[in-house]
Image (cartoon, rainbow, N blue to C red; front, side):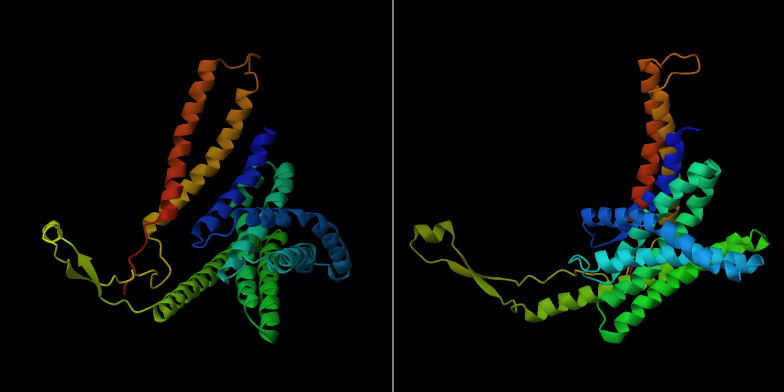
Length: 354
C-alpha cells in the first residue's frame, strides 16, 4: 500500500479533531502558538520512549498474570510517561504565554499538545500495522489522547488563575485524571481478552467528562464576558439627550437661526448570550458526515497524488484528459464534505431563552 496513503490515514484524524477544537473557540488562540504547541506534543515522543521503557522494566517484578501485566504495561509503559510529558508542555511552555488569558484556553492547548503526540504515535503504529490499524485508532486511540488532553487542560486552565494551594491541587488533579483515564483505557486493551471491550466504556466516560468540563468553562467564559460588559456600562458616561442644531435652507436665507431637535440616546446592543450555544441534532449530523467524508477524501487524494505522478498498470503515464477527469471526480465529494463540516461548525444551535 502507498506510503502516502498510510501516512495520510495516520495524520488526518488528528488534524480534523484539531480543526474542530480550534473552530469552536470563540476567542481563537494565535495559530503560531497552536502550531508550536502541536509540534512540542509530537516532539515529546522522543523522551517518552526511553522513560516508558525504564519504568516498565522497573515494574516487571510485579507482573505474573494477565491483570498485573496489563496494568504495568498500561500505566508504567504508557499512561504515566506520556501524560507527564504532555503536562510539562502545558506547564512549562504554554503556561507563561500571555495569550493563555482565560481558563478555557487550557482545554484548547491541552487538546493541541495531546493531538500532536497522537499524530506522531499514530504514524509509528500505522507504519507497522497498516490501514486496518489506522481506521481502528482513528475512532479510539486518537480521541482518547485528545480528551485526556481536554480533561487535563480544563484543570490546568482553572489552576492558571487560582492561588496558593488550590493551584497545586488543581494541577495534580488534572495530571492524575489524565493518567487514570489513559491507563484504564490501555489496561483493558492490554489484557488481550474479552475485557478489552471495556476500553470503549472508558473512552465514553472520558468523552462525556471532557465535554462537560468544556461546557462548564464555556459558561464561565460567557458569565465573565457579561460581567465585563456590565462593568463597561457602569463606568461609561450616561447617555443624555443631545440637542442637535438643524438649519433649514429657508432659515439661512432669512438670516434666522437653526432650530433644535432632540436626538434619542443610542442604547448598547446585547453583546453576549446567556449561555453556551447548544448544537442541534442536525448540526451534529453534518459535523459527523462531513468529518467522515473528509477523512476518506483525504485518503483518496493521497491515492490520486500517487496515480498522477506514477505510471498506470501498462507502464504509461495517464493522459492529461484522464488526469483532469480524475481531479474533477475527486473534487466533488471533497467539496461536499468540506461544506457539510463547515456548515456543522456554524450551527444551527438551539435557541437560547432569556
